[in-house]
Image (cartoon, rainbow, N blue to C red):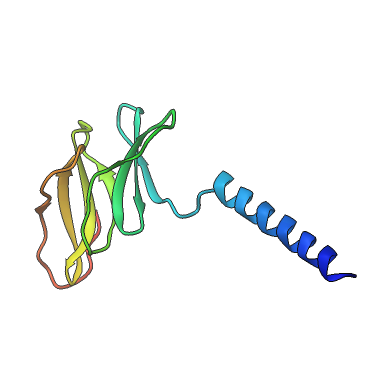
Amino acid sequence: MTIKRKMSLLAALLMTIGTTALANPLWMRFNAISPDGQTIVFSYQGDLFTVPVQGGTAHQVTSNDAYDAYPVWSPDGQRIAFASAREGSLDVYIIDRDGGTPKRLTTDSGNETP
């Protein structure tokens, strides 16, 4: 097999892998659908984002150096509880659905998730 043929096969393989990654975005983790069924909250690279269930542009809810994950909607859909490592271990915080300043709910030294 020639070098040119090997390079063509490699390029085709890489394009297939890239297309599969776009079709199956495994980097979105810990999804939760809002109580009204209209919005999804998810963790991406340690921050929380929301997006309409129909698709569209994601809105960043948290932004910090700490790891934020495990989002859970409040029953009225106005707030999101989540775990964050802002103080070292995971503690539970709550934030408005559109973002803002999170409020810390737990202070134990162990890891806690909502």
